[in-house]
Amino acid sequence: MKVSKAQAAENRQGILDAAARLYRERGLTGVGVADITRDAGLTHGGLYRHFASKDVLVQEACTKAFDWSIPVLDGERPHATVGDRIQRYLSPEHRDAPGSGCPVAALAVDAARAGGGLSEVFAQGIERNIQRFAQLLADGAADAGGGATPSPQDRARAIHVLATMVGGMVLARATAAAQPALSNELMVTLQTQLTDWLDNTSTSPSK
Image 1 (cartoon, rainbow, N blue to C red):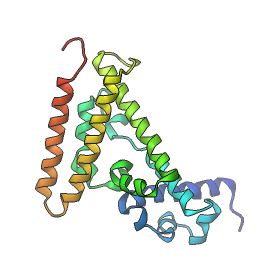
Image 2: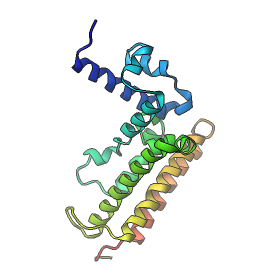
Image 3: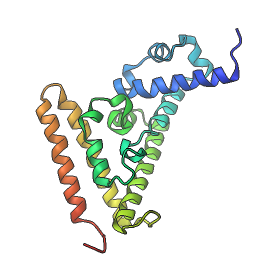
Image 4: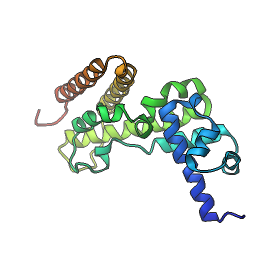
């Protein structure tokens, strides 16, 4: 039975959605083609009608995973601060749901080992996040509604914050099963330390 273009596009999107989630949950080597197609409700052979190879699927799925953003960035609180975003990222909810969370914390090591095209996907995604956070810091420092130009200092602070958040989440996940109290302590400590550091390095004219 011939599949319509609309159904084919829906099937392709279903495969991408399943792959983006499963890769973040289990890592790139922990997921097979059969796992992805089964999760998407399709047959094994159907995947290769949409993707030339598994490598192509991996790169597209990881690109899609970078559509993720810290939930408060998407409107939970219209005027959420960078501190709010730090708190939300370094939270038990994010730690316990890697499949719907940050692709960097879940897959950075896999990307480094894979190199090539996947490394480029991660480089571009990380760069976009640095630019986004630098913009947020610039707007906050200028007490502006938006549109302030990020300075080199804003970019450096954004890199510091993002790298610390990602590293903290990796450590929190690594320790959660054996020592949940330590896992929680890591997140709470980094929330406080990052927020205090940002306050102390603010370029706001009022400081």
